[in-house]
Amino acid sequence: DDNNPVKAPDFGTVSGRVTFTGAWPATGDVQISIWTSWPPAGPPAKASDVIAKGTTTYDYKLEGLNKGEYKALTVGWRDPANPSGAKVLGLYWANSDSSGVSAAPPFYATPTIITVSDAKIEWTNSNIKADLSIVK
Image (cartoon, rainbow, N blue to C red; front, side, top):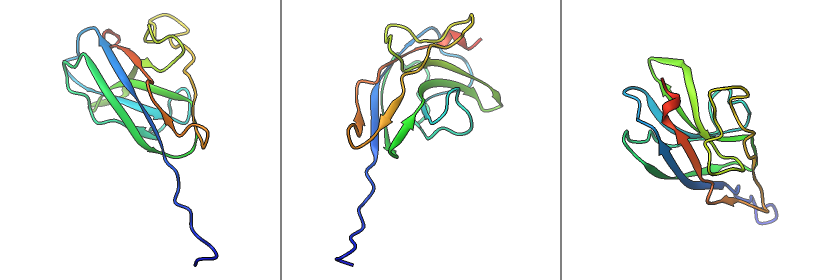
């Protein structure tokens, strides 16, 4: 065993603050999710707990990320009674003054790709603005 040591895997962390604008929807859940695909498809690689309604800012930390490329970090809304109606409320992208989501095409800005690697295992200040008014 000493000649073949097993190296424990290194796991990444992404953290930051979400700032919410608009009124909270009466139903559904809001969470932060990180995805290996864009647009998001299937389950996320990691997701936060459900964020309490009425929150204006939320500090998050997604831990245990495998090394690799994550195509999008999003704030999303989903009504458990109608999961197919899920909406992206904001995403992590180059312009942190905007949610990156609009009502007119192209609908979404290009998300900033997060690469968890030996060179950068921890991503901090990955701040997102989320527009709750998108849920209508």
